[in-house]
Length: 614
Image (tube, rainbow, N blue to C red; front, side, top):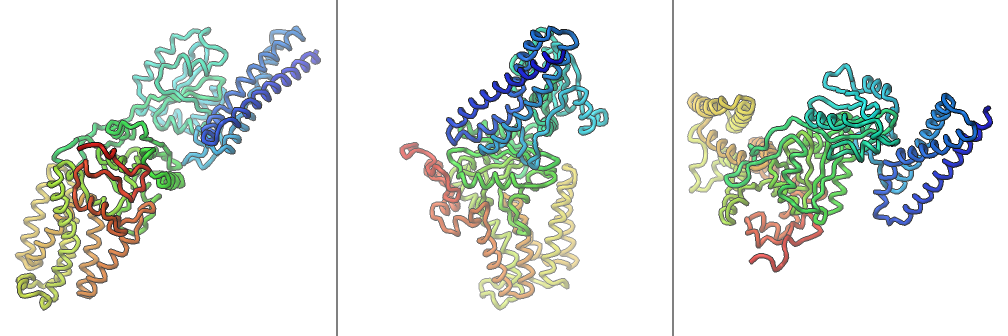
């Protein structure tokens, strides 16, 4: 009785093998006909489909083999069921082997497996299959995700169209309204509604969701669900459907507190990545605007988005940024963009910022049009603009919201405030310590009376006092912050002068320096300038004129030597660029500013046609 069974099994194996070889040959021929530009996409597609197509071929071989065996053996009932189960196991094993070959071919073609085997945060792990039995699937969720332990992990098991299914989601990240609507629609399915390929039927015919993707890797499925999506498991299938039914906690866009303007939009970025990229897309309706998504962090798997305009950005700059982000090996990014900056820029102990942050969508959109690259990190309302220079950090959106003349005036006033915050206190201290250096016309400069505390120590104590007041204002409830600031500034300062701890001139010049610091658009730059001011005060107190000269020179040399993603930090001063320097000193009219900055090396230098605008 075993002879017909063995013959049927051998015939099924030969038939399935011939069909697989023919399909493989056709696929290889189509792959050779494609040009090199599409090889990367081919590699991704073939790896993604490597496990699904062989399974379909195995099912076809199973049906053909089953018919041949029935005709030869004439047996039915339990015998047919046993042989069918054996054929199914053989076809699935063959499908897994063919899927592995497809993945290897995709890697050789220069692609990376979709599902993210080589994505940041996966450490290049091999594809890990999803269990084919629903019981094994649920048990694995209990072990690895904490199902039945963590209250927010939800698995909804249902029978739809005669197939056992399970919906895997996180309470609070998936929309209950959307999922209820989807389940309500799917409950109308009858047993005869599904074809032999249930996965295909659900994917193409019945799941009423806008964005649905297939995923056959366990780790990438977990990442998708932990990011807010919902996984739909079908019993007997090693591929799941990922439904985009996210519903994140979100606040409404509001004007950033550090970048307020009198005229202009009042919306700002929030902590949700999708909202932030939408605010920029609303302002840039350019089909060449690109959003590339990466995942960083072994545990957090944080979403990082690289934004650029494809026909403007310098490709070498883009590749450098992409490579630096992809190469980050870190446990996680709970502090979002700041940790990513430290992991990619690696500026060490240099206090000066090498990236620019902005919370305004219009500022990010304008920089993208110049040729910059913007980096969004999920859970952060700040966007990194790369590369940047020292002079980019001292410009503000308000200057471009006014007329060119008024904008230039505001820019120069801001420059004077920044220079005062850096150099006013050290220069005054130098003249106070060396009155003989003053010309007769400036003999009034200097303290009218001396204190028991040295002037340099008074400035250091005043600096510490200002920092303490700033921190107190940040950590104090808003209704009380103004009152604390007034009490600190008036009572403490006045009492300190009356008791002889400070002289009036110290309070005056420190107040001017503090105002200049607060007028600096970049918060990071203002803190770096404060550190430089403290260093200059100490050098002047110790070495007088040589200390001031050496301090200035050292800071300037350090700034000149800095580079932001291989771009000179002090451009357009060093190296000197006349057009770029003119745009720094003057707020040029829009129609006269026709060229993009040389610093960015854009593909298109012209912002508008030569005949445009009159």
